Length: 219
Ligand SMILES: NC(=O)c1ccc[n+]([C@@H]2O[C@H](COP(=O)([O-])OP(=O)(O)OC[C@H]3O[C@@H](n4cnc5c(N)ncnc54)[C@H](OP(=O)(O)O)[C@@H]3O)[C@@H](O)[C@H]2O)c1
Image (spheres, rainbow, N blue to C red):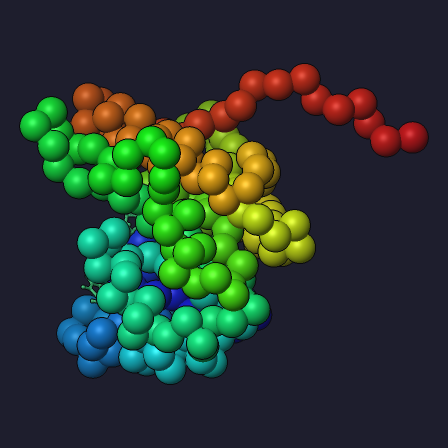
């Protein structure tokens, strides 16, 4: 599969490298594909990785993965071009974090979410939110003690969620579909809980698991 990873930060570089390890082709979309850290990433990851401006990466890919700072996301999608993403799955990994008087907070509040906003910016794309509730180092091939936990995902399109569930499973996580894109409100709140625990424990090696009754085996 040919992926565009939009944003060359920690998340974009981790997911991009992981997808290449799994045999996929990755186009790293960036405002500056010639930036030193992007060139170094392409050299390190090797065959299967290229860097392009956002628009070219979005146009060439089959699936896009949005890995931008929340405050830069609207601009990144403007540069990527909604027309280049029509009909495509867009995996949204963003968290709409800001700083309030009591520390890290959600800037979207609790009656909206980054996932829903991304779907509004890309009305003709199939947005699936996932991977936002763990540290980037564990998004693909997690190594969490006692883990891996569950990888929550949500979105409005059932076929898109099935494709992303298969991808998440391939990358080492049991996928757990929690509903339509409005469930991103919960997943982004969960990410805030993840950060709160990370700060208090000075650790990034944790994830969430939903304990539940397992369905009886088929047959
Ligand atoms: N860090 C984690 O482990 C983690 C875990 C879960 C979720 N997340 C979420 O994933 C997203 C990415 O996290 P990160 O740690 O990779 O962030 P980051 O290191 O700050 O990088 C994000 C990237 O966003 C792009 N960007 C920033 N401002 C932009 C603008 N004005 N216009 C266009 N593009 C812009 C930049 O890419 P270019 O310079 O290449 O254009 C930048 O490298 C965030 O929303 C974060 O909350 C992070």
